[in-house]
Image (tube, rainbow over the protein chains, first blue to last red):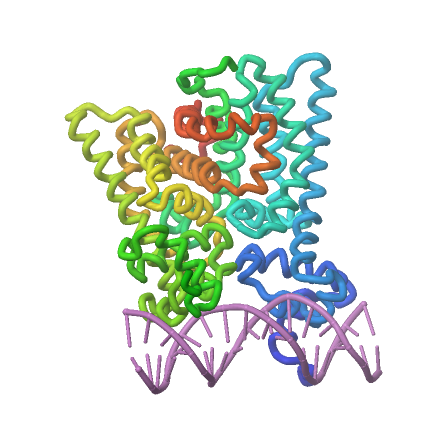
Length: 246
Length: 246
DNA sequence: GTCTATATCATGATAGAC
DNA sequence: GTCTATCATGATATAGAC
């Protein structure tokens, strides 16, 4: 057996986890950095992750990250854009397809909610799209006080939120528009929290669910979330004393 | 006019913002540090805030913070415990009072939900309890990957969540317990998101609400949130093919 | 209890050889 | 495009005078 190469141990181990069989199947440097950053931002947050950790896990040189992305901020942007571009265009595609099938008929609220939130949750099962890792990262993004991240999200979500809001207006003509906006926010919150999955916090709050059941419970998240969201979306309106007509 | 004292400019300005009239009304050093940390953690996050910023804003010396709290981690813990101790004991008090009034009758779900989430939102209107600032900090805490914070929250929430979960079991005997747990999570998420209030993100998502209306809309958050939460809590159960009886 | 001064270390970024 | 070496900065924490 040849000796292990003289790389520092950390580098070698990390490098090998990317090439279990064929070295030529390694993703390129740029992609390896994005993958490592996605995973580490999810686990330790943006401020809690250093460029050295990222490049160490990716098995590339520190300077390579700055060569490819220019700065840590720009890397964060690239991490989110890679996934959100797919997610939001897929959401729009599904919604448009539903509308085309329905012809002049208005869509059902459950269809719209599924096109938005179901598309998101199903993305979490696809490894090539970031899977659970990106889902958790996205679920936590609102809690992150990073300004760059918020303006990025605002820009990436602008079109898709407008489209889905308008679809809900049409599907629920009897509900005041301002109430639909509020409830869309509440739905975003319930979903973000559900996918943010923090082990230590969950350990204390997932009481009474036997460990063997956990995996099965996970795959039932979508139907449970859907029924909760739709119940909230169509709940009787709060009794609000109007000062101006709606 | 006497010359300004020879303090560095930053210190003097920060100091004066605490004593508009009577110097003897200044909170003590410990409290000033807690207040400054609470505000800065809310605005820039834990990792994004330095001890120098905190002590600078509090108008105290850097070494004083370490003298009083020992470390930055311990300061974070103190910031949360100060508010959560009040909040969760108040929640338990309100729930117990309701149960005593109801005698043998089960509580209505709306009472339980209000005791938990209404107590939280009403806390946000009381400046002496941290007001909006602490509410936003708490709303973002799940997105924060800090391990210390999560174990702290898990410990602080353990008792109160168990009590409210059990109260919901009694109030909704026809709903399987596992479904109640899921829906309690969804309610936590919708509420956390609603109070996390991030200006730049809200700017893009609070579409179509005229700026003059925003303040009035804010005070209507509670009834709107309550009707959404109750709608979700009591929604028809998802159609899940059971493999084991509940 | 509060201050000054400082020890010690990790960070993001870059210069310049190859 | 990738490396080594390094710079400049800012972080937490503490020693020790008062």
